Image (cartoon, rainbow over all chains, first blue to last red; front, side, top):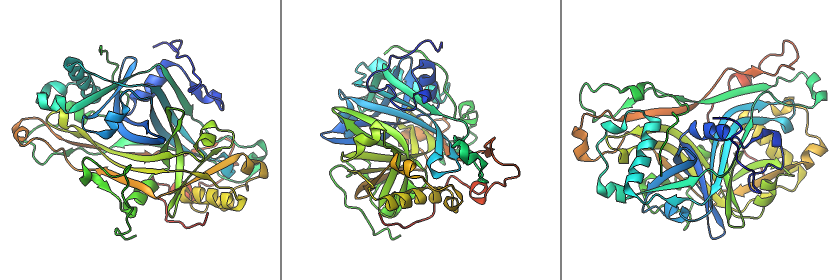
Length: 228
Length: 228
């Protein structure tokens, strides 16, 4: 995707400080959203913010998440302005003064008002893309969703219209005068790592580990297309 | 710390669903807060939630974070009700139906109204505990904070009074009838991992990597005590 495909900054997303760390390129925003299923969604109840961790996925220019229809959080989010934030903590930055210590990270904030995916087919399609984005070829192997399960699930969809990315990387930035000090400075990189799979004790005997499990890496899911 | 040291549930923190996954034990809440520096703080501006990633640290029964005094986000958070959420994504849970796929995680939400640490000594002490919590013995090796740096830094402090933890772990929970299906189910564990240190190119020659860097693990920092 061309970097020229950019989102227009708004009063919410325009960076006032450290603007060099910001990006409105959809390619950057999408890459950061796609590189983890974990996001934090903030919505407000009266004068109180509530920030809930959940799993998201992206289809084209929309980001989705889902939850129980009975969930207070899901019910409260519909039709309200939310902020969906995704952050990768990429490293700890050790400088020669406390002040210049920092963190390397990639983050995206998406602002907007989510709506519930109403149509059952669209809901199933969205859920399929969620599973397929994480585990290609898995959906077709699963027991299909029941009417009861579909009814119990709310899928929310948010357009990626008002959004921005913010990134810090590289070594510490110290005061020129501090570079002479005999203090070790540098970066401890951090990344998510998968462990050994833990098969369900109820698995049938001799069931092979599927390719989508053995090859799973904590990395961007494939680009996918769907209409909602 | 005794598990009997518990936080009283409130209308915000009481779990309506999946209550078995919740905990109000301070030991659980503290362990989750302490196991990563990354949190997401939600505050609101008019009718819009804003969720900002930042680094936090805990001292006794308060959680702290800091930022530039010039930061809009920091200015807006003071005196407003915020929600500070910490989440560890511990695994992806693959079930025999899409519906029962899940994630293993540990999360904490802290609600309250932060205040800025006003006193300079308390501010320095708080920042020292932040650095020391991550990198024991480092603070004394650093160039001391200047008046200008202190003035440019806002440290926020939030009491851990209205808070709760939520945890999911273990294998998938499928419908009894689905256990007969020849579908591989299980968990892909995930964890944060450190990489090889990247020394700053400006480091003086032959500067050894300090113990607090070589031994750094993505794990709970030590328990520390400070008055604020």
